Image 1: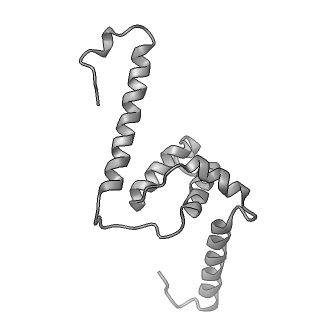
Image 2: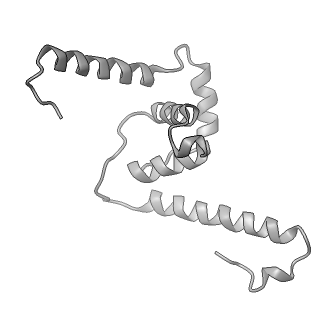
Image 3: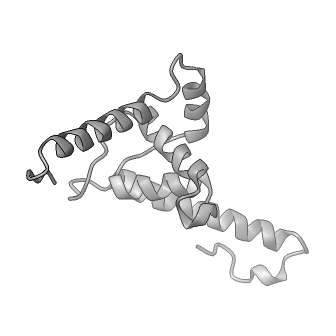
Length: 130
C-alpha cells in the first residue's frame, strides 16, 4: 500500500521505516477485513481466546510450523484467518495466562480428550470414529 509516489527520494533510513510502516498498515487492513467479513463459511473457533493463545504459543515453542522459523504474530494471524476470529492482543493475553493458577487448561483438555479417544479405539478397534 504505497502512500508516496517516490519513496526512493527519501533520506537514508526513512525508506526502510516507510517500508516497515507500509507492511504494518497492510497487516492492519487485512486484519480489519477479516473482522468485518460476515457469514463466512468455514471453521469457527468456539473456545476461549485464552485457549487459542495457549495453542499459538505452544505451536511456536514446539517449533512445528516452518521448522520453528515463524513468529507468534504470524501464527496468530494464520489462526485468526483460519478460524475467522479477531484474536486481539496476544502478548497481553499471554501475560494473563501466565498469571492463572493453572496456565495450561486447554492443553490439559486436549491431552485428556486425545487419550480418551485412544482408549476408546483400543477398547473397540473395529469402530471408526472420525
